[in-house]
Image (cartoon, rainbow, N blue to C red):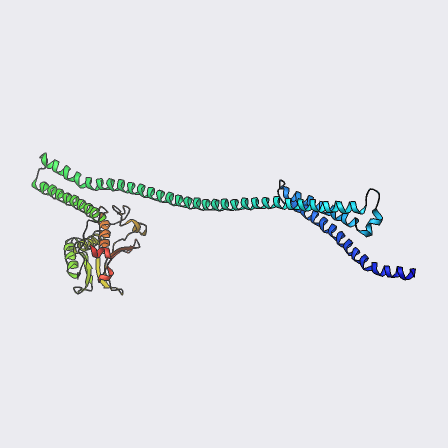
Length: 407
């Protein structure tokens, strides 16, 4: 009878003991989990600011939960027989575990609240930092643009300053050269006229010679003044060219005829290629072209040796333009002087065997008169085998700039 009773009771207690063992295992697992969380948040605390109390509170809360879970584990029936003493029994352990759960949970909630506020403050701080960084980037970019603008303005100022210095120096050189070119004929006029006024001229032949020299100096002075005035008019856009499509042959014959006396004096022959160019037409201003052609021919005759040939050639280009080429057999111009030959008073003083020379204004005026006609004037020479001057004229209105047509 007793045997049957105890065997039945054991069969009833076996499921209960299995359930208690499972709960014991869960309690021990909670201890491990809470201790793992303690170590996790403790390691996390090292990576955040030292004054963040939220993590510390959370760590304390999980430590409390770990202790409560340990007490809960110890208070289970399997363990109570081993640890039960008059001062420590299962009821006390269970009660302390429940209190520990409450305190630990409360501490964790408080810690999460504090940590959340810290995270929000940190997020706000990061947002402000990003805004300040963006503002600093924009200000830096603005500063760079301002710096570039300042550099550009500085470069413009230096260029303008250099241009102003060059312009001032050019004016000084112009005035110096102008005074020299004006003083030379004036000295001749004043000196010769003074001799005549003092009655020191003894014969009529001397009087005629002095008068001729005064007349020649006066013409040179007038030519220089007129040339300077023409250059000033062109520079100030006051010269109004009359651009008409017309025959170039008649004007060229007139210029050649005007230069024949000087050519005969030096026994220089003027050849034209082709001989008949009366059919050639171009767009040009008659006054400006007369000055250019006359000056080019006069230069060729002045700087050519006696008994040589000056050639005037007219040719049509593939682009439908007209070229007038004046070439001589003189000593030529050294290439180093070709860059400054069109400057005012730019005649090269070191040219050898080039005759008496002029003021250096003729080519400067010729170049500017070529520009107002939308034509080009080019001078070529190797310094040994003569000089070739080429002026290229348009032959159709579409080859003329709008500015020239408007004029």
